[in-house]
Image (cartoon, rainbow, N blue to C red; front, side):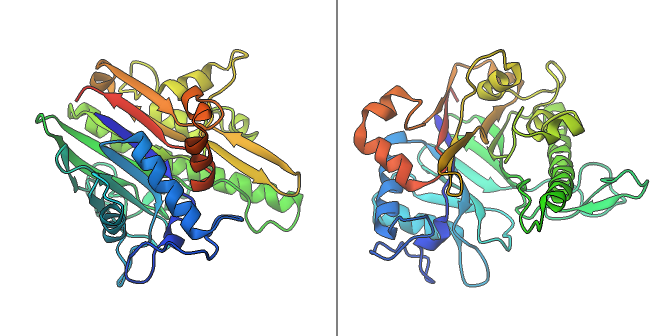
Length: 339
């Protein structure tokens, strides 16, 4: 079975108010990309990766009059994709939902949130509520929330294998709105604290599942990774390391994260590529992960980053290479695993 995660930039701008795909020559949300070109590129990539399930990060909007699930199902219907069923969780206010599009002949997937809903209960809070943590060492807990609550799914494969899946889009650490260098540093440190708190919250949920003997896959965009920025030294570790846990202690595993953690002069894998116009250059980073729990790690599996320049097959297929570059500033990550 192949499972994927993919952050599609400005996916929401490719759907109208009736959740129908827009394929025209107007500009998409992506820089210098028309809507038809981006939509065609997305569909080409989906057909090439041919995953049984895709966890979309920054999926189309959901609110009173919009539905991310309906939008993705309309996309599948329009382009005859076998992944024809979608599921979302708690809607957010960012126009960037987390949603799973999957092949219903291969699996079932249902939104199945866990956690407490009031402080009197034991265990980690539900992801649409609040998490109390002292962020600034003043002995007073602050209230941490997810701007994009993780999508918790109960999944069962065609073979009858049951597992948990959590789709994640953790808060960005970028200092948006900074007025000067000092302000940028202050905002970056504040955002790093919030990002780490979200990852600690997520880690608590992971440990609860592992202790309950649940098989679990955590996948998505963490906006973070080992060695990604200077603030990791200040706080001791990245959010990705927090969620993975320590080796041998209810830990999760992702080979790309492991390679980044080793950092012994080896090039680190990357899953995203951003153009910095002021510097006229591209910046690459490892932001997207598929983490599996212990028993799943023992199964025959293979991870792949569909990078247009780092993956040989992607680079040699000119049409696929161009589609990956046109579709998004992130590239899909897949795992083939015997479920």
